[in-house]
Image (tube, rainbow, N blue to C red; front, top):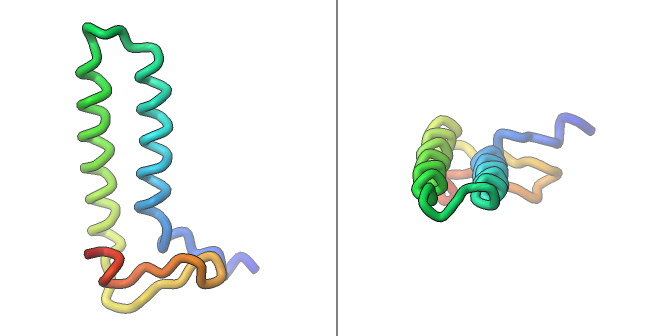
Amino acid sequence: MFAQLNYWAALPEIVILASASLILLVDLFVSDERRYITYWLTQLALLVATCVTLTTLRLDAIRGYNGLVIDDMLADF
């Protein structure tokens, strides 16, 4: 059962979802004068997601979550 849950296939999407949730929460408590913090957090999140995508780059396809997520060269492009 747990062999079919391959987190590497969905890791870039998980990073984007987690960082977007964190940025939205931070944005609630930041004043208007310091709104640049959410901008830089967004840029950092995109950079981290790019690095994760490049680290999971493979020639063969990885299937995860019982075939619901496929990480191949087309998905990384």
